[in-house]
Amino acid sequence: MVTFIEKHAPNVFNVRQSDGTYFRCSETFVRKYLHKQLGWTPRRATKAAKKVPENVDQILTDAFIREAHVIRDFGIPDALRVNTDQTQIVYQQGTKTSWSQKNSKQVSVVGHDEKRAFTLVPSIAANGDLLPMQAIFHGKTPTSCPSPKSPFYDDAIAFGTRFVPSKTDTYWSTQETMRDLVDHIIAPYFDEKKQELGLGPDQNSLWKIDCWSVHKSREFLDWMAANHGNIIVIFIPGNCTGLWQPWMLVSSV
Image (cartoon, rainbow, N blue to C red; front, side, top):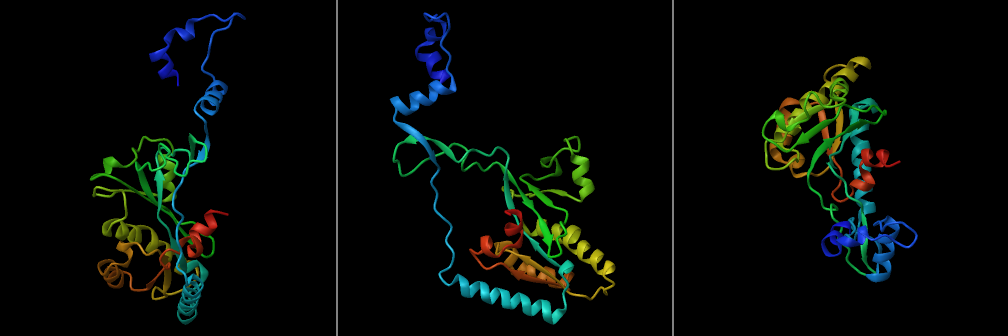
């Protein structure tokens, strides 16, 4: 607003009013102008709602029975049952509201679809343990990751956080980053808990992840079987993460 006034009526800011004050482009003025002159009103951004399967109840019942079957048959304690999620962390999160015409059906918001971000990969065990996190950054080398001089970098490393470059044109998980996650976070956690519980190295663990294409790929599952055969992988049913993903349900409470 200030930019437009300075371009089209710059003298407005220099005119002294009868009460001795000068015009200021205050928040109150902007709101009144948008509302009375343009007929705009604050509106929430529009987007399509996520759809769940029509037979979602049956799908989740089957998933529950399948998971209970694995836990019972392999005697897996809560400390050896881990759920991993992947979430986009936007560097500069925009608001979900903006000014738009009254009764408008579609509302666009600057920053609402902001894609400059990184992927955070958190994991939590059924006993409440929070595992170290992996953070994936767009770039080819470690220089794409936070600098060791960054604030609280040492604290993150002390917690066990792994900063890894995607080595692709996105910041999404890949075969390489998933293997890094398992080798340096998931498997070491399971091994540590087995020792604490007095269980042998052949004790099975359960790892619940979503249906991301990399997770379900034959390449990744074959690698898991060959290198971490005691970790049983089960999947969150498609389009059901908001209902069946433990991490999402816990973190939203």
